[in-house]
Amino acid sequence: MAAPARDATEGRPGVRIASPTGKWILLTTVLGSSMALLDSTVVNVALPAIGRDLNASLAALQWTVNGYMLSLAGLILLGGSLGDRFGRRKVFVVGVVWFAAASLLCGIAPDVGVLIAARVLQGVGGALLTPGSLAIIQASFHPDDRSRAIGLWSGFGGVGAAVGPFLGGWLVDGPGWRWVFLLNVPVALVCAPIAVRHVPESTGAAPGPAVEGRARRGFDVLGAVLGALALALVTYALIEAPSGSVLVPVAAVAGVTAGVAFVYVERRRPDPMMPLDIFASRQFTAVNLVTLCVYAAFGGFFFLTALQLQVVAGYSALQAGAALLPTTVLMLLFSARSGELSRRIGPRIPLTVGPLLCAAGMLLMLRVGEDASYLADVLPALLVMGLGMVTLVAPLTATVLASVDTARAGLASGINNAAARAAGLVAVAALPLLTGMGPEAYRSADAFDAAFRRAMPLCAGVLVLGAVLAFTTVRRPPPGCLRPECRRHGSLTAPPLEPERSRGVLGAGGSPGPSGAGPAS
Image 1: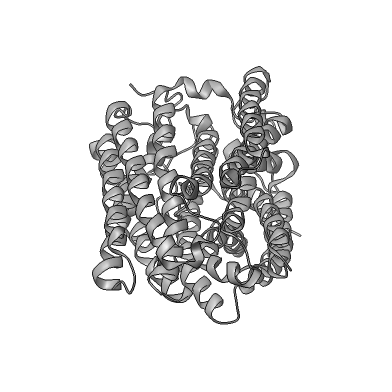
Image 2: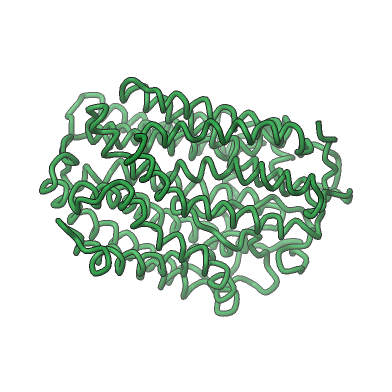
């Protein structure tokens, strides 16, 4: 087994990227995070096949997507804290094994109820391994190699996200939708032993300079439970509202109550999972509001578009998955350049123009109907959508980091990532309700097409709201503030996670992080 890591952020040497251990660390972290990234993109393509095979209603398909997003969004901050407390490698390996076991349960699920429960368990595994993979890189590598290692990790992860819909479509059309989940098992069988054998263990509890990061915070299980419960109850109320059940208003009230209790607990605890004083930065609050608007629209768009292409346009699962490739490819190719442009001109214009471009792309999707031409109807919409995402995602992350103190970089990024996932979760729950989709809408091309045409203007409107918020509230950050280390990004469901950083550690680009990059004005 690998020797314990000596964290370079505390002045001790780390692993070099060219060494055999460095290559093993990169391989295992890329494999682990790619499982979660793949799952967040391939399942949408498999939904029609799942519905047919398990005789599932539209609400059940919503829960198939949202069960995973619910536990992931609610527990991702706690997952990072677990790694810092009990060992990053240990928690990462637990997350990989947990994710694989839940994936196996998804793959053999005899009915949709078991599938949904397994998806919730998958999200728990994702909450353990997603922050854990980045934390391992941050803790293990030598400072001179850390930015490059993070860049390779995020780049290869983006490639996995790009391949996901294509691979998922091929599996659905070939061996069947169950293999979308079963594929995770052999990946985990490779990933976990490599991690145990070659990844050095590390924790965030070692003595050193005072850093207000996860390592200095306690273990806020109550906050995590209340946050996840609030999301679950609100999601239930939105999805089940068309049924007219008496439980719907009860769940809605209980969800709001749990949300209020979450805020109260986080305000009163000495060691909260999400310290509310971070929102004292007006810039941080503003950019998270923009995040909510943007990723709510994205979540609804990608959920409905995968169905529209198959149910209405008559695409196979493989064709639908391949159709979505341009958006991710554009992000992989140009997100780093977008980040550099934002650094020169400030984030306000990119965060205003980007959502407007995405809104235009969604309105162009209104041309996609029965027997739609890919080149004439689908591709132009997705290219405009991709250009909008390229324009806004990198500046969004940069503005989040620039709005907080250096030592809170990881916390700020985790909150922003969780907010994006929660927004997508609520959108997938709310859009069918707002557009009048019945429980069998996805079985009828005419019914689904009519609802899709009502949904796209709603998503575009939310993006316009995000653009207005960005234009009126986002300001240029002060010079020399913290910059993102994840330069390339391909995920469609959330902005990139950024690592914890301590004062004096070199940031991306070789410049020291500031000792106190407070709220930008």
